[in-house]
Image 1 (cartoon, chains in turn red, yellow, blue, green):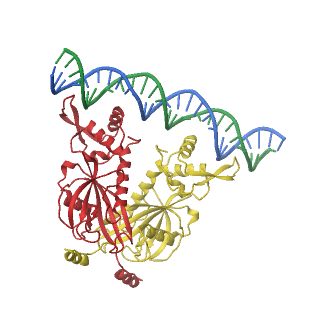
Image 2: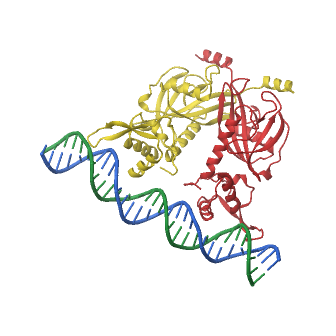
Image 3: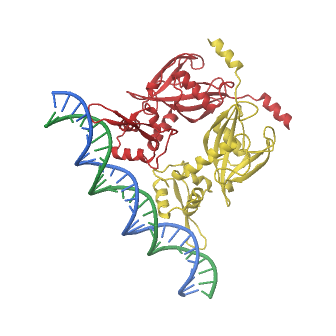
Length: 235
Length: 235
DNA sequence: CTAAGTTAGTTGAAACTTTACACTAAGCGG
DNA sequence: CCGCTTAGTGTAAAGTTTCAACTAACTTAG
């Protein structure tokens, strides 16, 4: 029994595994995703989600592999990172049965410095129109990106996730503006305040204020050891 | 450039990939999960989530592989199937860097006939106490099962998912009882009715009624082309 | 044949939440 | 010091949820 197991195991053809990332940031233009232009076949010259293979002697686990890819492309070391899903089939890669473990990352634009290099000939932010980007994407990355966008948009309704798109210090007005841009509708100021207060996840920064030509606003930051908190109800 | 790519690709050690399932059903005892006892190393003799490798020349995609495992173990062909996540690390399997693509399946007990065989020396339902089973599980399957249970319990609050634990025809009272067992609290009858009505996902079966020694109840079934519908609010 | 028991399904008033919008506060620039 | 802008608070009306009682339809015991 062990013998037949082992011989099956030896001759067994393992699928190709990659870790791919949908890295989101907010720019003046709106929500954008980071794309990398492929330097090698298959799909050489096409845009794709940045990704790579698992380095079996370097990455401890899947999340470590995702962090490595993110750090290589953006220089960001402490993002919000969440697994979106796995996409695997015989057809998605001409080289054979393959699967893509997909993460989404949320970063603040001013924390990122884009890095070229690797198997990639260009790296750039691409604006999201509805549920896609304008460029055609390699592999099944258009479908994967669509799922990541849906996950992000959905979580905006009932979680504190959008805070990760802002820099470390922000005002409540800025946070509300992020929600409104992602949701595409305006929110009530007092209701927004109340929601944020009831799920204790941000704290005022002592003394500091942000001043424009008007009343200055309290600055807040994410509380220690909080990443995402869910609301009972919708925002 | 292509040349160096190819030689890296050739020498590249791919991780081990398995597809594992948390198959849930409701018994008289409560929520139970299907476990398989391993016949081969590693963890020979231990209980584990049923699973297997991807058959690269048989499975079109990941979901097909999950369906194959489910069919082999339970005989069920049309379950509710949902991807829970991927768990991958260098340490979880002594044979090397491995990853487990995990699905959860919801089935009605009377649709299933357990099948022995394969690499497995026993298959059995195990009751869930809180967020685990009493048996110690192979690999990191205890952590994976915990995530699947959490996903299931969470979705009970705001989706129609529990309907998949019932047979094809059921009464509203039976459906409410499933929710109550999974949530561990009782629900209001009229509120429950109202919720089910507002997300149009079940339909009364014409004429048929279920009679006990009391007023007979309307039988319902899942509407065609509906799998899960989400509520605006909590159940 | 009727009364008691049981589960199905409906109704409505009280308690609570949300929404919309107006109000006060604090700064800047003329 | 007045007008403008954005921050932050208060409140009344509208909408939802909860609780509990009511009616309905059947079986069984007497």
